[in-house]
Length: 112
Image (cartoon, rainbow, N blue to C red; front, top):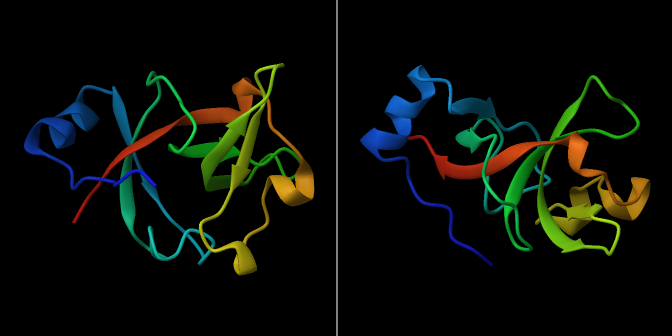
């Protein structure tokens, strides 16, 4: 599992230039990696690989966003997303793999 670094001053400055955005995690589906209320920085343009944490639009409840880890990417380029806390996560095991256009960006650092 990839380690999520603490945001550097450079990463924090990128928020002001619009190349990163802040996201507040909600719920326990990514425990212990990310806690409820924790703030992370997301890169909209980063290349996404298996093992990365992403923010995505929920494929069914499209006004909702989720934070999940990429478990695999299938041949059609769809992303299979799962929470680190499998017992308390609604994820691709429930709604299937999501298309790339649902991925809002890669979580690159935590604030705090």
